[in-house]
Amino acid sequence: MHEDKKLDKGDGLVQYEHGQAEKKSEGKWHNAYKKLAFGLGCAGLIVGIALITDRALQPRIVSALSETSQAQIVALEPTLNSGQAQEMTQHALACQIPLANVAIWHDPGVIDAPVRIKSGGYLSPSFMLTDVPEVIAIPYPAPYASGAGTLMIMGDAKDVEVSLTPTVAISNVVGAATVHVVWRTGNPCA
Image 1 (cartoon, helix red, strand yellow):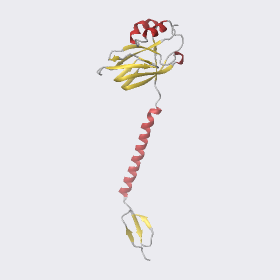
Image 2 (cartoon, helix red, strand yellow):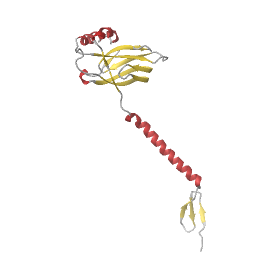
Image 3 (spheres, one colour):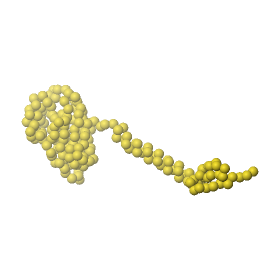
Image 4 (cartoon, helix red, strand yellow):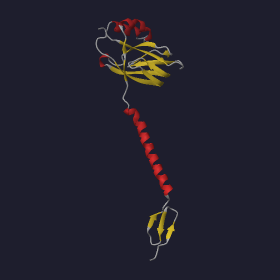
């Protein structure tokens, strides 16, 4: 029986004289490296997908906003935007449009920074965020009867704490950070 002569052209294939071709054996280590590279590629893909979808899968944290009591309204008027403070205070005292409030501060050892609170269409005056909680009056961020809305903490600050229930901790505010809030609806003067 005549054995065909093998021709190796250096392209990973072995060509026989009579035209048949077969893949050249590349050794057990080459195959092991291929499998390892494939496995690492798959693992990287899975980790990448998990990181991308992680935010979408996390439940949105919603905190309860505190109502400003009748006794607090006048005391907190100076924290309101000066162009709207008197009207907002009068409406709140007459039980027409209630006000909410938050205490806000940063953790000890962090540099003080100016911030503002956006509540619906209202923008608070700028105030210096320190490690001492400051109570700020704000209107509810959506119509009072809706019971839900969003606040935005605006500025550049680190380790911000906002007294809601539960307290919201924001590690890094760059530009703005959104906080989803809810509140009890009903007669605020009852």
